[in-house]
Length: 325
Ligand code: CIZ
Ligand code: SF4
Image (cartoon, rainbow, N blue to C red; front, side, top):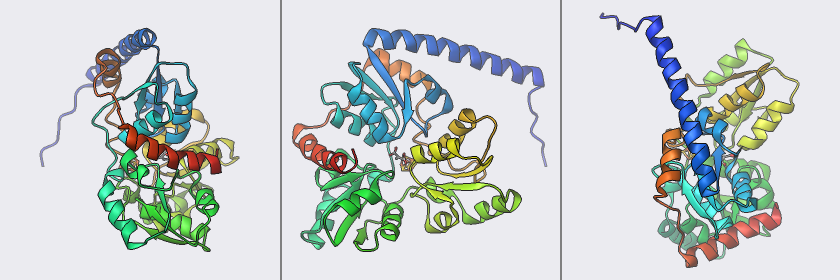
């Protein structure tokens, strides 16, 4: 078998040094453009670590959208996927909103269209719809209330109903069902391909090697992973739980950006992933510093939502905020 020849150590060290210089130069270009544009940069916890480190705020989609609404900046560059930038635009209609990379979409959000939802609702007349924030503005506009992974259970409890349609994530829906048994949750069959890559046998094997480890899981994971978890919650809650915990070892069952973030937040703790480097959302990694620089410079692909859609979608978000402000 042919053995691949690797570059000598000095060549690899030179590459590392060049990359560091390039990053420093890009950081400076972005800093200047940001000032000129009066812009704020927001990064989801799933983004590349250099993007998270550059951002003014890091968090989950709703937390960041709230930041967007409260800032004095005239322009927002959202480093995340399309539905997140749309949510920021819905909450900040007077600001200009751009995605860090306009090609970054969410396969789960694309698993249900407005037309699909209209047909789904027609099968269950009068049953309210809760839409996960991972949906397009058009789908939110056809829904009664929005939710995030952080507040989904509280939102469903607060809607006065004995049945609810939950779109698009079947795994979040099953989690809600387990927590709110008094309401019948009828779900759409969407899923997150990244979260489904994590395997229970990998969690079990890590747990075997590190029995003291705390297992942290996102509700988008499949049931067998959630059954192994010591804590289930949103990215922000996973982060705060790990930061506040006395434990030293964690098995992080969500997109790898959270593990990277936590490794930086808590250098004295160990964060492990239950897949061999596969829990990476390719869309979340599309945004590079070059894309952010180009977005600030060229102002292309602005997020625009037609008024008739925005007014209805905002109602679903406002309803969620009234329950879980
Ligand atoms: O709402 C978000 O940001 C998502 C998609 C995940 C999470 O749990 O934070
Ligand atoms: Fe969508 Fe999953 Fe990627 Fe989140 S991690 S953006 S839900 S595909």
